Image 1 (cartoon, rainbow, N blue to C red):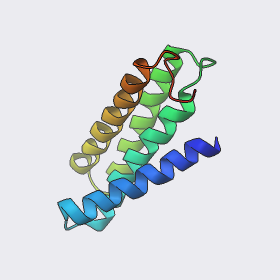
Image 2: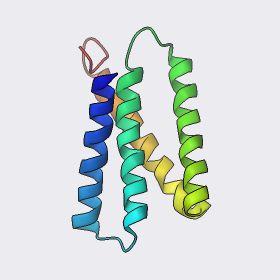
Image 3: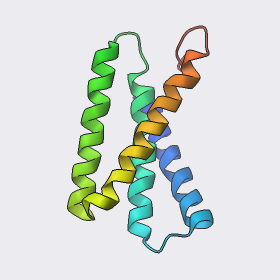
Image 4: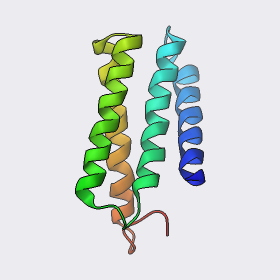
Length: 110
Protein backbone atom coordinates (compact mmCIF):
# COMPACT_ATOMS: atom_id res chain seq x y z
CA UNK A 1 0.00 0.00 0.00
CA UNK A 2 2.86 2.38 0.77
CA UNK A 3 4.40 1.91 -2.66
CA UNK A 4 1.01 2.57 -4.27
CA UNK A 5 0.88 5.88 -2.38
CA UNK A 6 4.40 6.68 -3.58
CA UNK A 7 3.33 5.97 -7.17
CA UNK A 8 0.29 8.23 -6.64
CA UNK A 9 2.40 11.06 -5.20
CA UNK A 10 5.15 10.85 -7.81
CA UNK A 11 2.67 10.57 -10.67
CA UNK A 12 0.76 13.58 -9.38
CA UNK A 13 3.84 15.75 -8.89
CA UNK A 14 5.47 14.86 -12.20
CA UNK A 15 2.23 15.34 -14.15
CA UNK A 16 1.54 18.68 -12.48
CA UNK A 17 5.05 19.98 -13.16
CA UNK A 18 4.88 18.94 -16.81
CA UNK A 19 1.48 20.59 -17.23
CA UNK A 20 2.54 23.72 -15.35
CA UNK A 21 5.91 24.33 -17.01
CA UNK A 22 5.41 22.96 -20.52
CA UNK A 23 1.71 23.26 -21.29
CA UNK A 24 1.10 26.42 -19.18
CA UNK A 25 -2.64 26.24 -18.69
CA UNK A 26 -4.46 29.26 -17.32
CA UNK A 27 -6.26 27.22 -14.65
CA UNK A 28 -3.90 25.86 -12.00
CA UNK A 29 -6.75 24.08 -10.20
CA UNK A 30 -7.64 22.17 -13.34
CA UNK A 31 -3.97 21.26 -13.88
CA UNK A 32 -3.85 19.93 -10.32
CA UNK A 33 -7.05 17.93 -10.86
CA UNK A 34 -5.64 16.33 -14.03
CA UNK A 35 -2.38 15.61 -12.19
CA UNK A 36 -4.31 13.88 -9.41
CA UNK A 37 -6.12 11.76 -12.01
CA UNK A 38 -2.76 10.80 -13.53
CA UNK A 39 -1.22 9.94 -10.16
CA UNK A 40 -4.36 8.11 -9.05
CA UNK A 41 -4.15 5.91 -12.13
CA UNK A 42 -0.52 4.94 -11.46
CA UNK A 43 -1.21 4.32 -7.77
CA UNK A 44 -4.34 2.26 -8.37
CA UNK A 45 -2.75 0.24 -11.18
CA UNK A 46 0.19 -0.60 -8.94
CA UNK A 47 -2.10 -1.46 -6.03
CA UNK A 48 -4.23 -3.78 -8.18
CA UNK A 49 -1.16 -5.43 -9.74
CA UNK A 50 -1.44 -8.61 -7.73
CA UNK A 51 -2.53 -12.12 -8.70
CA UNK A 52 -4.95 -12.14 -5.73
CA UNK A 53 -7.30 -9.77 -7.56
CA UNK A 54 -9.11 -11.14 -10.60
CA UNK A 55 -9.10 -9.32 -13.92
CA UNK A 56 -12.87 -8.58 -13.84
CA UNK A 57 -12.46 -7.06 -10.37
CA UNK A 58 -9.55 -4.92 -11.60
CA UNK A 59 -11.68 -3.74 -14.51
CA UNK A 60 -14.63 -3.00 -12.23
CA UNK A 61 -12.52 -1.04 -9.76
CA UNK A 62 -10.97 0.99 -12.56
CA UNK A 63 -14.44 1.89 -13.87
CA UNK A 64 -15.54 2.90 -10.37
CA UNK A 65 -12.42 5.07 -10.06
CA UNK A 66 -13.17 6.75 -13.39
CA UNK A 67 -16.74 7.38 -12.26
CA UNK A 68 -15.49 9.00 -9.06
CA UNK A 69 -13.10 11.19 -11.06
CA UNK A 70 -15.90 12.35 -13.35
CA UNK A 71 -18.22 13.01 -10.42
CA UNK A 72 -15.64 15.05 -8.53
CA UNK A 73 -14.56 16.89 -11.67
CA UNK A 74 -18.16 17.71 -12.57
CA UNK A 75 -18.86 19.02 -9.07
CA UNK A 76 -15.74 21.20 -9.02
CA UNK A 77 -15.53 22.26 -12.67
CA UNK A 78 -17.93 20.99 -15.34
CA UNK A 79 -18.57 17.76 -17.19
CA UNK A 80 -16.66 19.01 -20.25
CA UNK A 81 -13.58 19.65 -18.11
CA UNK A 82 -13.94 16.41 -16.15
CA UNK A 83 -13.92 14.09 -19.18
CA UNK A 84 -10.19 14.55 -19.98
CA UNK A 85 -9.36 13.24 -16.50
CA UNK A 86 -10.76 9.81 -17.36
CA UNK A 87 -8.89 9.86 -20.65
CA UNK A 88 -5.65 10.44 -18.74
CA UNK A 89 -6.63 7.83 -16.16
CA UNK A 90 -7.50 5.13 -18.68
CA UNK A 91 -4.41 5.81 -20.79
CA UNK A 92 -2.11 5.44 -17.79
CA UNK A 93 -3.98 2.39 -16.52
CA UNK A 94 -3.70 0.61 -19.87
CA UNK A 95 -0.06 1.67 -20.29
CA UNK A 96 0.82 0.21 -16.89
CA UNK A 97 -0.63 -3.19 -17.77
CA UNK A 98 0.80 -3.08 -21.30
CA UNK A 99 4.28 -2.54 -19.89
CA UNK A 100 3.67 -5.30 -17.33
CA UNK A 101 2.57 -7.72 -20.06
CA UNK A 102 6.06 -7.70 -21.56
CA UNK A 103 7.56 -9.05 -18.36
CA UNK A 104 7.70 -12.75 -17.69
CA UNK A 105 5.86 -12.33 -14.40
CA UNK A 106 3.16 -10.17 -16.08
CA UNK A 107 3.60 -7.75 -13.18
CA UNK A 108 5.68 -4.67 -12.46
CA UNK A 109 5.77 -5.54 -8.77
CA UNK A 110 8.18 -8.46 -9.19
